[in-house]
Image 1 (tube, rainbow over the protein chains, first blue to last red):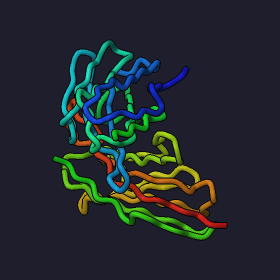
Image 2: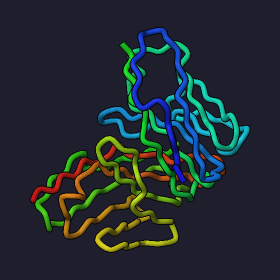
Image 3: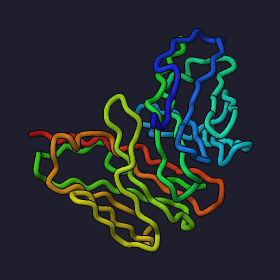
Image 4: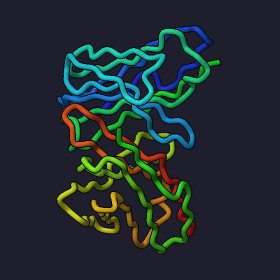
Length: 113
Length: 113
């Protein structure tokens, strides 16, 4: 049982480049989430998917898009990266929204120059 | 929407002392309050949680208390050890289907021996 996996672990982009962060879980969870973590800002929700086939904006969705490819996979895309998107990105999953423990992946450290 | 405030942002204690971290929330409909621990270079991990129908919950050296009237909840760690050094996050979950956790900004706990 790998839990929540994220690829890549590290990435450096130039301003304007695009990339997709991949996330997969093997716990048969229904809900998946993308957060960004910046110093002193805690964990801020970018997008989430309460169930397969649905996605919703979180607190900081601008500049990002998501795809819930299937029940296991939830990807985050940066279409035109900006230095303000330099951050650590975490994917998480839960059995369902609200009451359930969120399981986090190891994170992707992204630097945009 | 929900807003979660967490204090203090940093906390230094001696090994064996107790540590207390406090959080307040704004949405009176929130009814689930988890605490996460994040070690350096890793994703957050759930350490304890409490639901609104319970005032206190304890798990070995860790306890959480909830005051719904005042809309605040606290994490108590007794007999601290160096391995308790980490960043701790509180969170609250609004009682609506399809919504996600809202996190506080985190507390960096340092336990010196």
